[in-house]
Image (tube, rainbow over all chains, first blue to last red; front, side, top):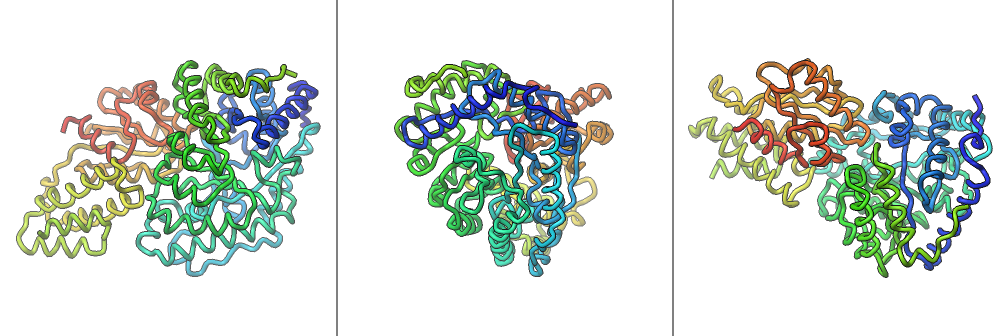
Length: 384
Length: 209
C-alpha cells in the first residue's frame, strides 16, 4: 500500500506552514517573541478522532501513517499553530526500553502496547549485565519497520527514534515502579546499583543506536526543538515515575543520576507527567534547557523558578481542555501568558498532550489566544 | 506505649519488626481488636492524612501499607472469627487496556486498612470481569485508570453494570491521574477520589460506615 501525502493536504501549503513555523521558532529562540503555541495531538487523540483501534495503529504501518497524515490535514485545516509534524514517524508508544532490552511486547485493543519487565526479582540486580547491542534483534526490526514505513509514505520525511527514559524511570520500566520504590527504601544500595546501571546503559545505548540508523533525520534546529533526537549532543528524556516521590527521595535516588546523565549533553528536553510542584527547586538545579510542565503542576511557580533558565511548555491543564468551555481555555491561556510575561519563554499548550476527545473549539481557544496575545500579534502573517 | 510503637513502625514502613511488636503486645494480653483498631488502622489513617497534606509521598505510603498488611496477617489468627468487622466488600481493578497497578494497589491497601474486604481483580480488567465479580456482598466497585485512553473504559464498565442489573446494588468509585470530578460525574460514577487515602475515606462514606 502506498500513501501519497498530497492526497491528504496541499503539500505547498504544508511546506509554507513549516517554513512559517521555523521563522516563529527562530524569532522565539532569538528572544524577539516570548510565546509559541501548538496542540500536542498524540496517537490516543488521533485514534479517537478518526476511529482507529490502538492495536491496528501500532501494528499496521499503513494505518499508522494514514492516521498521522489525517492528523496533519486536520491540524492544517483547523488550527493555526506554531508547529506541525515534520512528516510521519514510526510511533512506538512507550516501548523504547522494551526495544532496547529485547523484551516481549503485548498489543491491546484499548491501550498503547506494553513491554514486559526485564527484572523480576530484586536479586537479579546483583547479576545485571546489559543486553548485547551487537546484532540487536529489536533494533534491527525497528530499522526494518522504518524502511517499510518509508516504502508506504513518500513526499514527506519518515522518521523513527528510540529514546530511553531518564534513569529512575528507566529503572521503573525494568523492574516495575512499585518494586523500585520499595527497593529504594528497603535496599538502597541495590537501588543505587540499578540506577548506576541505567545511566551507563543510557549513554552506551545513545552511542550504539546510531549504528542502526534509527535516529530521526536532523532536518534543522526546529525539529530538534520538539524531538531532540539528532545525535549525541541533545536528548529528550521522560521522567514520569519521579513526580511521585518526596524532595528528599528525589535528591537521593533521582537527582544524582539525572545530573550525571544531563552533564553529558548540550541540550536536555525534560518531560514529566503529573504533579511535581514539590520538585521544582530540584529540577531547577538540574538546569534542563526545556521543561514540559505537568498539567497538574503549578505553572506560576514553574515560571518563577525554572523560567529564568529553561523554556517551559504547558500552561493549560488537560482536564480543563477536555471538559471546560472555550472561554475557560482562553482565560487559562491568557493567565499562563500573563504569568510568564517578561519572566520566561513559553510554549503554551495542553500539558502534556490533549486528552482524547478534547473539543476542537477548546484547542482553537488556546491557539488563538496565544496568536492574538499583544506581543505576538505583530508576528501574525496571513495563512499561507 | 507498645501500641504507639506499632503505630510508629507502620508509619515508618518498618515491616520487619511489625510481627514481633504485635506478638509481644498480644503476649501482654492486649486484645487483637484493640491492636487492629488503635495501632494498625489508626496508623494508616495518619499516613493518609500526611499524604493528603503533602507530608509523605507514594513510596512512603506504599511501604506503610505493606507494613500494615504484615500486621493484619499477624493478627488474623488471633481475631475471633467474625470479629474482624468488615466495612463491606469492594471489588477493585484497573480498567481494560491499562496495566498500571500502583494506584490501584495503594487504594486496595488503604481500603483494607480501614476495614473493607477487597476483591482485587488486578489490571487490564474487562467490563465483563467486573460484572462477574460483583456478588450480593459487594458494596463498592472501584476502578482505576492512569491513561487518558483507558479511562474511557470506566464508562463502558458502568454501562455493563447497568445492563447486568447491578448498578443500583453497588456504588462506583473511580480514580486515577487523568480523572477529574467532572469526568466522574459525566460517566455516571458515584464518587471520585484524587488519591488512595481519600479513596478509603470516601468508600466509607459511600457505604455509610
